[in-house]
Length: 211
Image (cartoon, rainbow, N blue to C red; front, side, top):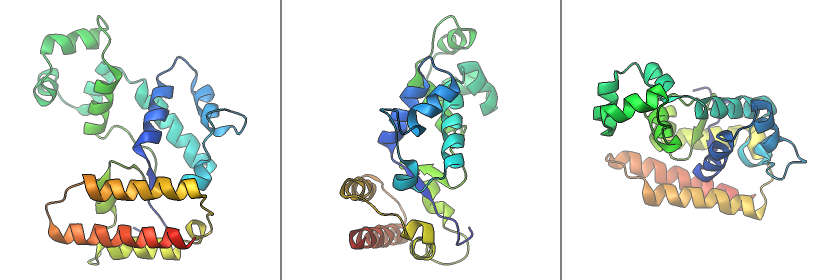
């Protein structure tokens, strides 16, 4: 990955808010405006909090909106699997799947979301990941023979846009909590991966404290 690029992390609690809003009976432009207009009560400063530009935010929100409106039939078709395969993977009775696909019964949105994420049908944008996509994020830094932890440090220290962000106290706490949750909740089988991730998160924590 080019050194000029940095990974953007969207906290799971923020994604939850975005996803639930996308399920509402609103037009896509209304949905986007809800989170991008400073006049909105739900406004999120994505630039300040997550280093996302305006076009990146609009594309990300549109992708979330479109994913939230995928039907069960759409998801199964996009997965390339048969209904029977889906039933085995998620332990869902085939009759239930057929009723969901036909529209006879409505499938729960959280079931559709689990399938969407399982089959990688949710694309937030280039180098934009969810907090819980820890393995995907870590693997994005691997590939040229150096430790992933070291590459994370280099990306942060060399990117001027990231270094120029002024974090408020609440922003620091939000980001710090994310790092703590990452260390406490995510388990890796490879001890070297664990050391690299801990080193990187320690670096991030120290870096943010100095801002």
